[in-house]
Length: 244
Image 1: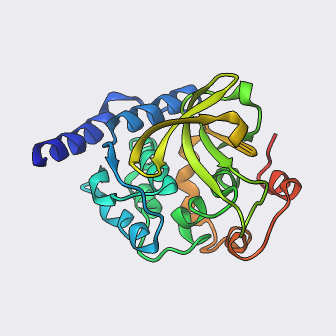
Image 2: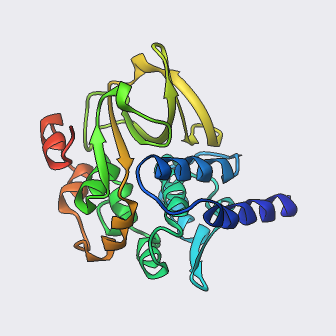
């Protein structure tokens, strides 16, 4: 098991050297490469204790990002997709900017960068919109593998919602296929009937260099923090997140 873990860390480190920094479809390719370098399994747990494992899994050392996703097991959906995002950003934004993206213990929804990404509702989409780092959209036929995808299992958005955050891999008329931390197994691929997806929101990061501006965001996003305590309409989400 020790050798397997070392291989995972080495693969993640080599990934940044193997793919040149770029936006658009090239960044989707970086996302998919990061997914392939992730471990499998480890279990799913959405508790605060599990959230506090995430800071142990990533660091910037000697100007390079080091990720050991085994340290964030068990995991949950937005912790998994965030580790993938960080790895894809290595080499795209400078080390000091990467440092500002690292999660910290007890990071509440809406606080800092990971707290935004991890928030209920469109956390990822709102962060990307605020940084002008990509585009948010709902058209299934416009989706490409490597896009981020928020799935709502019910119509509720906000404090009563049930959802899932994933890396989109593909779909047909019947199912959608994705990678994330999934119940009950943890890191891995899964497919579900599209009929179970009451609402979807795709996010394509095509200006990843703009994540270097994340340190200039306010410490807390009150709108996203509010997702914990009240319900929101889709029209409000679409307006605030500039959904097309």
